[in-house]
Image (cartoon, rainbow, N blue to C red; front, side, top):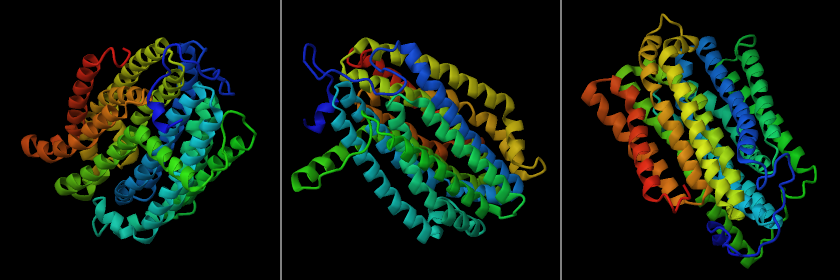
Length: 471
């Protein structure tokens, strides 16, 4: 079968191999949608929450244990994580859709082939990026908005944290496949264990051992080892429906593999754009906050960037949960279950997004004080701006859910377009233009403006193609 057939559901009346249950705790074709969605969503949310708590704890340890300049340096280096995570998600979400459709059709051998290709392609790309970061950290510092004062700190951090990104790609792809296999709790435990390890090592290296920003980077890299070990253990258990296989590299087969890799990358492109869009937001924000507020501004913006994954996890958890349900049932042409999944996901996104936006608006000053000493200029800037920045959270969450649904249907073109719109096309001019119109406050609402315009465009698209999108 050509890889392009994954774009199409099974036609009515068409005979396919009987679909197999994925072998884990859940049956994607028969379990009631609310129960299935909640069984995926809550473990995924808890796992990502653990990662977000890790991110926040890391920021607190650096900000309080090393200083505001160190916090600014980590924010300058943060795009290395977002780029590597984006590439990981490019193949992870792509293989989740492609392998999910194959499993829905009972084609387990094809699913295993896609999983193996995703691991190989993702790892190869991340190795190249990690080598570039290790050998030319000063270039990264300059590209991501740093200056000479922050350069030594950025260089130290990048040199020690980049190796961990190589293992992290396999961990992310592994978690997506494990969820597709019907074992979201195991994927959750991977995140929890890695986060607990990182928090413990962060504290030890930064405070008792006084290793500074270098210690925080080493802690992050070491914490990937237990996650990688759990992925390897899961795949070595002899699972029947998911796993790795030996790839043929003959001329004709190699071309097919390349086509499959490109197809998965196309399916995962919206998720890649979503992750790198955060990278774009951070880089452009770093330059603009440096222009208006210098290092204190970058440190204050760094607080918002440290908290942003806490918001991202809600939309990401919902999107990660609907992806395997939609793709599996697309393979079975079960449109009723697909429609029910989207409506439940959208409602969940609205509730979660409103909750985090209200919390950020009400407690933004207190959140800033956790990261930064209240006597510093960075704290004053952040305490004023974070409540304004928080208005973007609900808009962002709804955007991620809608694009995730389009991605699950294989509608990669509109999904990618909307991600480009909100993450690049609108946010860059918003950062550049708004401060000139309303002053520095415009820096804090730039993301809200870009997310709001994008959401209006997505809603128009959904209504315009309501029948085509099975709404």
